[in-house]
Image (tube, rainbow, N blue to C red; front, side, top):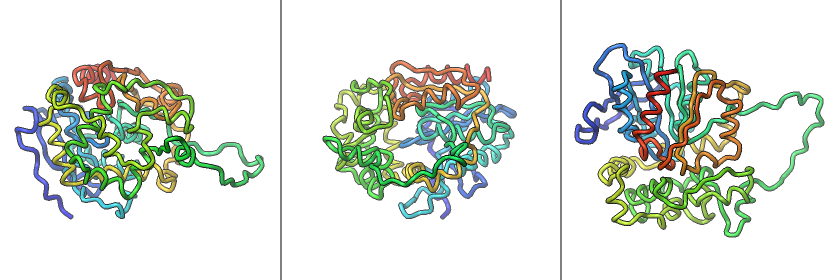
Length: 385
């Protein structure tokens, strides 16, 4: 199916940012935002968004990076926004949504734009593992990496020195999902919920409307929600996971729309939200009302199904060897949702980790909530890398 979407109009974007479409050579026509396109031979910076976001999430970061001398490119990732193929259904082939194919998407896009090198690939939320795999698999192209809000603990490991060990006996012990369901009240992990057939319809046909669902969702995961007071978890166990907010470990019988509904901010709070005014939220809600959420949810299905993660063990033991840094909000539970990942990133996954920056006054949407601080951190890191 060919892309019939149109580029954003000038009133949607800051002056100096443009919207256009590029064939990435990997089967899709990508909608992207860019800044710093006026001059030739500028180093490229690639910005990758997460869920439920868009290239538009980088709207306030594009120009500061362009003003620092970079050609800055932010695509709607495969399955999102105006990039071709967003009419995704649950029964579609999942293989195109695997992490290594997303690396091919990124590589194809920058090549189509005439860049043989990328000064830095920056990823937020689900864009963070995509950026990490770009840097891990093609360090010759992606010269530095910034991971935001989702730590990268490294590739999955292969069993080692097990030839002489006694053969393990298969067990039918309770899974983490059984343990969560046995809690009082019963709970479930949001990533596995997002992998279910009903997750898209729950949000797309939300009783409160897509717009109000997104308002509550963004609010509940931001520093504006006072209950976001994150701390490290001791283990990947039901008792520890139950300490996470409901948007991470949900009530068993509720969908995400009902989960976030009680956190809907008041009209006064919405009017006072400077990092996401209602007219900017409408850019998101209009896109998701049109496409639904399944294109983004495919990544959760890939990530929770071992059949689609097995190919990543090819890189077992590899580290990210290009300069790297990590940025997140101090009010972001995403830093700690998997016990030990932040520490693994610092101790072994990133060989040249040059900083872990926790930004005050930001929750999960750090590049939107505190765009000036994030822009300054990015310019300083990429310029030095």
